[in-house]
Image (cartoon, rainbow, N blue to C red; front, top):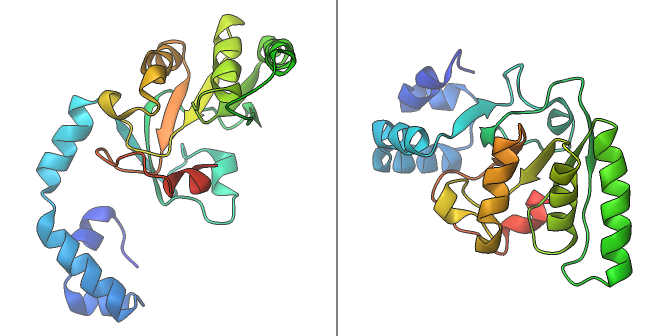
Length: 192
């Protein structure tokens, strides 16, 4: 309905109504818009070295665009995957037997050495093993968060160093949640 974000942000109620939004959505936009200082929000992003991409942009991750309900905006730190990167999601339990750890390390290391980008959730357990095994094999990994992306908000806190290492090694951490969003239980099923 709008050519750019600025037009949408500045749109009067009449234009919002013409865009086809429901009345309750328009009321929420008007309420929230009055509470948000865009300059301060941009300062937060810059301070934390956070980039933003919308679903309409070409650099938005290709496979993420194909899911049922892709996030309209994602926040990221690091390097987004190229459109021709082959990505593989790895998920697993927090509590695992030694055999599970060994098998995960072997499989992920082989995949990473063969230029497959490993995507996981930065959670404790198999997720962390997958990220670490990828990095140990000089591969690329992406961590998808269920919270804001700033350094002090990474969850679990024990994986903050791992998140920074992922970024330093040409990987990426991404989230659909704005800076300052706490790691609430309801965020994680959608993250998955």
